[in-house]
Image 1 (tube, rainbow, N blue to C red):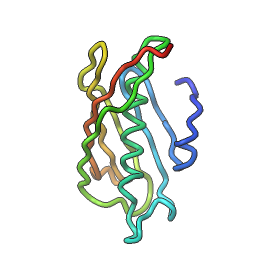
Image 2: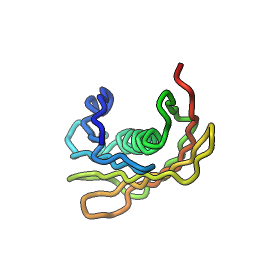
Image 3: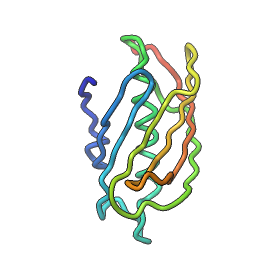
Image 4: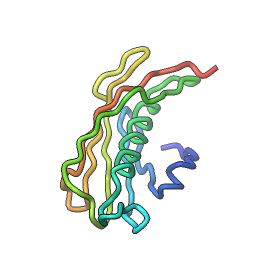
Length: 127
């Protein structure tokens, strides 16, 4: 996997641990700054794992000179993240010439499903 600089991932504190062949995995060790006022992981943190995972999965299949951008994502939060490590596993469901549909599942360190997201991305020529 080629290392890609990712300032937003650095800001939130997550890593892209795997990215190839239309698949991507993002991981995050939960820290206090990831929590909402109720003490659970903020939904935006989980969303960021899914959105970045979708972009990573899709870019692993694109030709040189192509980029992608989120059109929409729908996410269902199924249970709260409390402590430990979060892992988001993403794959391509369908990919055409100009759009792709992807799905992400976010798990806690006990492999319980915390959230499921489905997103649509556009594929663009950069240049």
